[in-house]
Length: 558
Image (cartoon, rainbow, N blue to C red; front, side, top):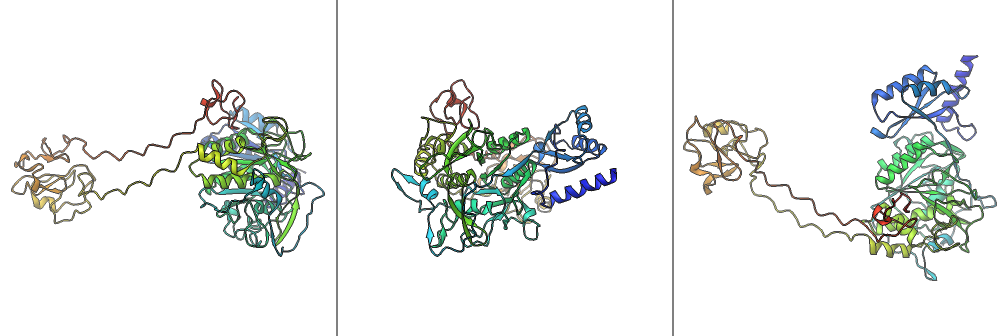
């Protein structure tokens, strides 16, 4: 009986790891182990406790002090014993929650429509570029400096309307992988990608940032979407950061919070990354990870700028964007119209990428603040739980950033080529130019010639005898920098220091001052962004914006 259960457990775990998670329930006995702090000895201890309870290590998330073990028991097992053993060792278990791809709203066109004969601009793209009463699309697209990472169901790289240079942020999802990044069985991720980056090529649709280069993709959902463990999401987010992405966008979620999730996203934002997530499609409810303070939570609006009836609303919704009846790329060459906060989120992510690359000296928090501060207010005056701060507006946000972010610094003047160095190893030294380096005792020129290599130093030997004026700290003594001041007695060797003085002390140069030229000071950093004190519960970028209150990661004083 026990053998059968264990074999069933192994088969189920194999199926989950191989992607058959859409039809199988999540294992309730899969846990984060909190308290190891990246300490290898503690990790080994936690692994031994897990093994003694009949479990195994499923994966690790993060690196260094942020590294967290994920362990699991058979689904039918009683996990209380494992909890007790872990607590006795000073560890805490936290359930690795399942997260779900946020589905599109019923009634949409799921069609595998063929290739469009002409290009059209989706209403949502026009909406976010609204300028007073007329949409003005951005034609002067900036060079890519702050790239985006899409965490979703994949990316149909063969689609003619999508950029071909998107890469896999997760090295394990390249060519030959069971579920590679460049395929999308459920089309959700490809639809998101099209809203962000569909190419301006006279066919199909156009995205917010047409043809955006260097996009990173991590696939967390399989061919039928379904669900995935929270730990897989965190692993994906860490891959995004490692790949160099500055914006992470995701349209997924679940109903339960996680300390490990929250801390991971807090750390990513503290590291300078902007994280954006769909609020959800469940009306008055809470959806994680969008509900965490550090994440920009996005609601969905319709063509009349009304909030969708199903758009999740709560006190953490930041902004809203078009999410009803959004046409975008699906399949290998098709187009479909979907609705959901999953469709609203890429409008915000794409606009954030365009803004940041047009204003590359800004910080992630300034980009977030610009989106909030300049959003078109809808619903109740000021921020409300349905629209957040309002519907995003590119042109207003761009003007705000131009006024509030530091301007790019001047191009630094070229550094002149230094003369023969007074410090360190002389790059021109050869066995024939009578230069001795620090640490090489020299009594005559022959000794100096024969000992070249030496240790890098800020001093060179000025040797005695008739040749005393030939070299001083790597430079000819013709200018008498040390000259006759140096002793000619071989039993009282002195050293010519880099500042042109002599130091006595026999066969040592310890009396020479540390005279290497000071390193060039770092340029004065651009001033950090600060605004006037805005008061409790208003927008902020630093604690100084909040009087005596604290500026939270969601950009609000609390």
